[in-house]
Image 1 (cartoon, rainbow, N blue to C red):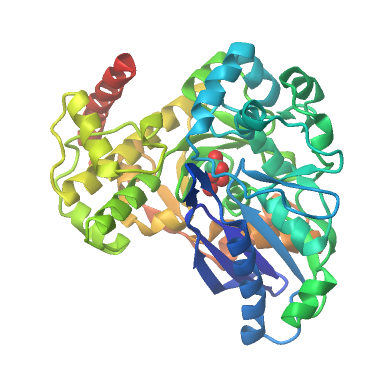
Image 2: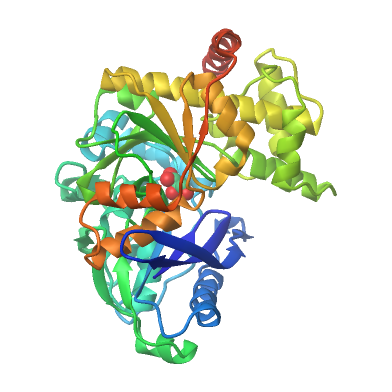
Length: 492
Ligand code: LFR
């Protein structure tokens, strides 16, 4: 089986082999995903990404004979394109970090309230949610599109161009802010109220559905045999959560990539005033679960530092950056990794320094100090988020499961254990692709439940464990951290 996992900064094609009880994976293609600023707007380069998808299928032929049983695509959330009845893509999809969304959110919240939106969809109002992007489009050029046009979210768009079928997979649909969280279907009342034509949306399919076959023209072009095209848990975070190697329920997860998504898997959304105030969202998961989680800026803060330093002429690897941070004393200054000031691309070191200055902290001067400030701040944010989750659930959680590429930063894993006072179970690194593939395994009828999937992941990819250290020091520092971020909230 092939999993094509598009992340916001890179993508990969992973070949998965299932032997009946265990999975093995092999990366056969990897590529950068660079947004393109054009005429004052920020876009995804869809055609380039589709080209990379084809290259991944082609790479299969170098690794194995025959053709894969199936292929499935997952991507980041919220972004979309429009496709007409002839299959033409109308324009390039916008990038969710596009600046216009913040004003659109503000304008829309004049028409409705955060509470109303939250109580209907369970989705935390964040400026980049599809709902606000559509509002921006409506204000700019209107949404009166020909009747045969449909909105397809990114993974659905790729799946459409692979299979010819226009549909919307449930987990990615949940990121739009336009689903009724109880009915798990489009919220027609809300669409009407906001003036978004309901006819733009397709039927919803559940993750693990075999949708069709690879289009003949692509099979011919790539000289590969037929394969099924599957709607997996196509929101990348949903696939990552599928692959958490735990059969216990009393854990919080952190999916660590460009974003750190921290939360818990539950059966019904939590739609209280507190969960809204704390910034928790209730996204749809595989097998009708709900992912109650918070978007934390995550490795984006380091990615943008790295990019800035490259522009200034110094190129550092993530491994080097980690070593530099390890050598620092730590717990000197903090930023709030949930503050919208860090959302847009741009000079990150400068924004971090400004934040520290504005909150009366010592300002990190060297690159090593800046990196350490980010890693400490993430660990502190995880502690804060854990406390909030425990308050919302009314129970104490025993462990933290960290998955995704970000766990290669062992310093972050260790500091998370220290800050939270809980052991961290780290792995798998390729959680999203593994979850994507395991949902394909399920679609093929080889496993029946999430528990079976998680058992198989645990058997196939034994995780690492980090014990918590230096508890008293971290607890004291956490109080300072809380004071710092409170100052900033007051200022803004
Ligand atoms: C992670 C992710 C998050 C989503 C953000 C924007 O890759 O999918 O879950 O909130 O990207 O789409």
